[in-house]
Image (tube, rainbow, N blue to C red; front, top):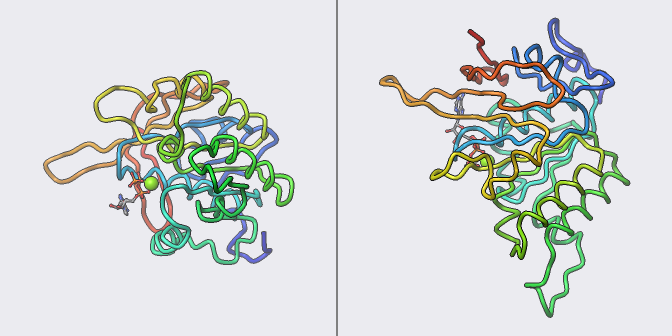
Length: 250
Ligand SMILES: Nc1ncnc2c1ncn2[C@@H]1O[C@H](COP(=O)(O)OP(=O)(O)OP(=O)(O)O)[C@@H](O)[C@H]1O
Ligand SMILES: [Mg+2]
């Protein structure tokens, strides 16, 4: 983190403690007793267009800028350039933040050894873990966003989804990195991930949802689950203004 004034902690903003990483979503860190417990796996879930990617990016962007956390945004969805354009437009530029790395699928593909004669046999779950281990070793990493589980699933043919997902989550947990897994919720069932088991494999669930009103569509955030934290389950309006997210608790 550079030492310029912009990076100084503003009044009321949370510092990273030994045990928690602040989200820097105004109002949310108080609810989370300071933030997300370190090394937790948190599902950041919602339907399409509920700002999952932006919220995930904003958490590690602020963690990097204000708390000096080395962070990785691993995208299997949008290209790195598309993310950079989007976050720049929203006032969250990654320029100059050397400790925030965006890894995109093209980069992942280059980093792993692919058997070109049998490309269908690539074990993407294993490869993603390998890439993350490599980054953690070489670059160091304290916070991670994986965007998204749906994209991981699209690359994977599961023989035994429960067993293989359990292994995948355990391998992520073994990395010792606070992880935000972006999960697009199915529209036909009330589950937080496609296989309906992601919720109990995770330590926390932050749910983003849109509600239609006669004046438009409002975005809400609810903490459905956060282990070792006494929190409200209330859905709170989530506002994004001037490059900052804020929840309004009633
Ligand atoms: N200030 C704002 N408040 C609410 N929504 C906004 C605001 N600015 C942009 N958006 C909406 O947020 C959307 C982008 O959010 P983002 O890409 O983070 O969502 P997502 O849930 O990751 O979407 P997807 O399901 O496509 O991956 C934009 O398409 C835009 O409609
Ligand atoms: Mg997204």
